[in-house]
Image (cartoon, rainbow, N blue to C red; front, side, top):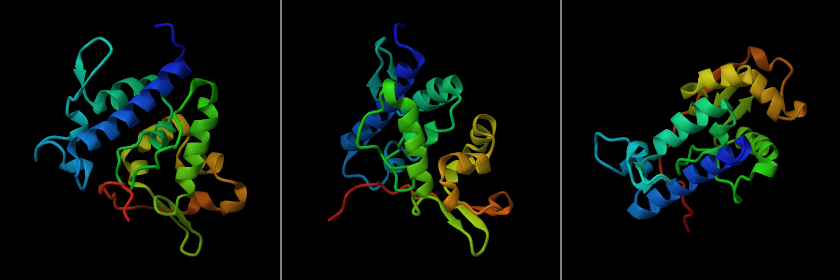
Length: 183
């Protein structure tokens, strides 16, 4: 209760990411987070950790009850990581309240510039966007002013064509394979 909003948000993002790694490690070797649990269950709904109040919970409420509705910040989608190849990359540092704005902006920019996850094709006037933009289009619209405003805010103007608003959006197939280091 004594934490401010930024401290809580940073904690929740870090908890989500750390608990995702724990979930993978607890079931490793696994080819995809989607392979955890039963055929009919979503691994993000799998209850596998205790909250501070002692209740058992899952990843789902961290993202969809505590983070998204409370903070109404589209950059959350660049910060949380589901351990899949198509997810935004996991940061090599924890999110901290004192630098949260800077870290979220940087994370959003890195994700948008990652050609494996998003790509602007000037020749055919297409933005090949992560499926996350499709799944959470309401978040990007309501909290970021739409996909084009998000791009304009987080990418250098030299990387954006002036007529970006007229580009088609082609959502990329989501690759749920485990994002792991391979020799």
